[in-house]
Length: 157
Image (cartoon, rainbow, N blue to C red):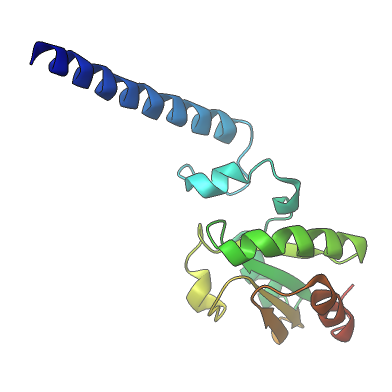
């Protein structure tokens, strides 16, 4: 019985240490620069902070201002926890850069009001706005050629 208590105590201590180490790593990543302007980010978002495919972020206030100013803008709505987004981003982000498209990225996991504010039904979704109004959208995982054709059809650059 005594050995079992010692063994159980060691296991609990290991879990506590792992939890503390995880929090320290998260805090280190957040202290290096947090483009979201929030103190409490989901772990999946923190994991993407250094990923070069997730560096063209837009925050809700900035997007709302651009739409109110009747700007032309193309927005990629995604969630770091969406498996289709995880497959799509490495296709779309480099493609947009290659085509000279300023594709801004809206993290709908961190800013959930985006579901209602922008009529998002599924992720990933790319919406092209002209004069602040939605012109076209494409949703779900697609092959690279489908996205390329969509960008070209909408004359996005």
